[in-house]
Length: 113
Length: 113
Image 1 (cartoon, one colour):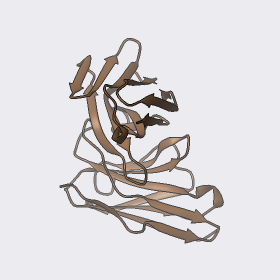
Image 2: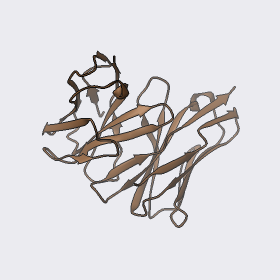
Image 3: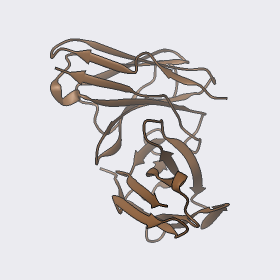
Image 4: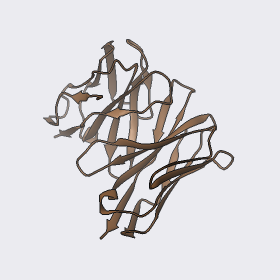
């Protein structure tokens, strides 16, 4: 059974803080993704990675960076958190190629004050 | 940029009726179209998918159709049940740019008992 975990379910941070969101998958998946979910906007892709140390920008990468030093771990970094980054953040992983099921983590609800 | 439009945003049906959700995509290189279901407070999970070389796929009460010429794909749920109540997301994946997946904004389905 695929397991994707995220480091926190809820997080409260102050404007300007550096924020780290961690995602770990245990299925040896090549692809990993970070999305943010906002009401009425669906799931918007922030960054994705198809291999260790590889990253590609999604649709809304501004204000975010990512790190993938190990295959099982994909980190999302908010260099200087802002109130408009308050959102639900979902991580996902999938096997190699573009036509594989994405398995999602439980999400991290981030509030930036 | 590429986008996926999904309609309707909200759908209310009586138990036993059918529900149809429609999506259009813009990237002609898209070749994989998954549908995800997200129940309240839970993570999105794949319910059905279709590849670009297939026009229709069915799994029990759920079916998906794809019209590549018109860049349309639809989800059909027959004999709806209260447990079908959830948010449904369509998505389109392209092999260009490293298997980027674009999600629709979601449809909130209510099935009234």
